[in-house]
Image 1 (cartoon, rainbow, N blue to C red):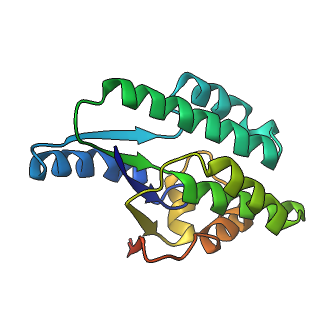
Image 2 (cartoon, rainbow, N blue to C red; image 1 turned 30 degrees about the vertical axis):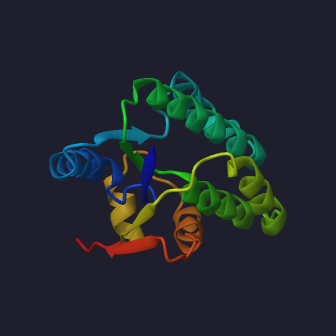
Amino acid sequence: MKIIALEGIDGAGKSTLLPELVSYLDHVLPNTEVMGAAEFQSPLGKDLMERLPTLTPQEKVLWFAADRCSTLEALDLRRAGESLVVWDRYTASAFAYRSADAEILGLDESKLLSYVREVNSIFPPPILSLYIDVPIDVSLRRQADSQDLRYLQAAASAIPESSQVVTMKLRP
C-alpha cells in the first residue's frame, strides 16, 4: 500500500479535493486499487471528534494515531494487490497541529513533537504529501465551526518542509 497525503489547515479544501483526486488516479492507474481515507472515518475517529475539545495535546496524539491505525487496518482488509490511498490529513498534520497546541498553551514544543514523532513512527510514510496552502481568512470563511485565528496561523506555519511535500497555493 502506498499513501499520498493531502495536508493543509482546516478549510483548505482537502475534503473537496479528495474524491476528485481518487477518481482521477483510479482512471489513470487502471491496475491499482485507489482508495480515499480521512481522519474521523473510523468508529474511534467519530468518538475522537466529540472528545477533541476536552483532550490534552498528548491525548490528541494518541487518539489520532488510534484512528489512523483503525483506518489502516480497515483498508488492509479491503486491499487487493497494488493499492494507493489518498489520505485527507495524515502524519504531517499531527506535527502541525500539536506544534500549534504547544505554541498556544506554552508547552515545550520540542518535547511534544518528539512524542508525536515516536507515536507516528509506526505508520508508513507517504510517497507524496500535497500541502494545500490557503489564506487564513479563506479557511475561516469556509468553516462553520471556525477555529481560533492564532491557532490556525500557528498550525499553518508548522507544516514540515521536505522534498516530499508539494505546496499548492490556492487563492480565492
